[in-house]
Image (cartoon, rainbow, N blue to C red):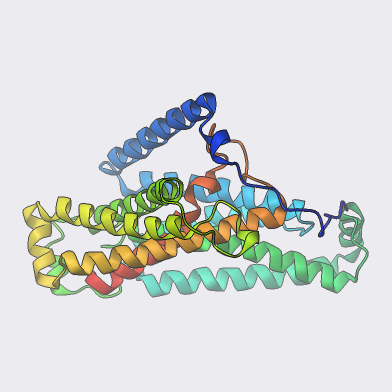
Length: 344
């Protein structure tokens, strides 16, 4: 196994001159346009069937999980790739089953957690039974510790990647099917089902607050000079002005989403019934902004632990899928929480 040098200096994040390189800036803008077009395209397809957006979310889960698994290997933390690749597919089919069987959110999450526990137990115990093959894997990984610790740590590493990003982002599945997977089928919500699509509202809130947080964090970090966040492993590009700007950006995005949806009579009436107003949306935006920024910070910390600048090079000018959705992964939990409080 190729051991990483723990004392080696962590890689520096790109400085402003590199980011503002004309060729890099052009590719970044073009990639952003393509990403936005794909996102809008799947929102349009969602008008045909909700499951179309599930496919989009599942693709993001799968690729980002594989990117994280690749970094885990760079950190000499072996995983079971087949489980990491299969869990997003399992989460997708669990969503389909939950919607068609009328399961609520708590039941869906309970099944997901049970699945994780079963996976951990099986992939910890089975390799111990087939010790001969496991010892070969240990040799391939260059591991010289005990067999039990090897299988335990490998299973634990696998579950970590299944949780982050897949399980956290599976809350976006729930948001997409929020009406069908409500915690409680309240009569006032049933009355508005024909005139409102709460899943659409939640998904728009999720993507808008995440994108506004990301964009405003970048702009405020560059335009407003401030001290850096004093945790060097998070990266030299993380500043307090960027953090505050990202949170304010999410709050702005939440207000914009509210104003747009509130202009339609069905949503306007429903928002009035549940008491959803601008002040509540400001709080929702604050919550979404904080969690989105925490997701971005943890993602940066993980990259620097692995000794890389980007998760991959799939998206020109941006890096990997996980580089773009690191805030969205955690923000999925925030938006679901907001939806549950307001409508559940």
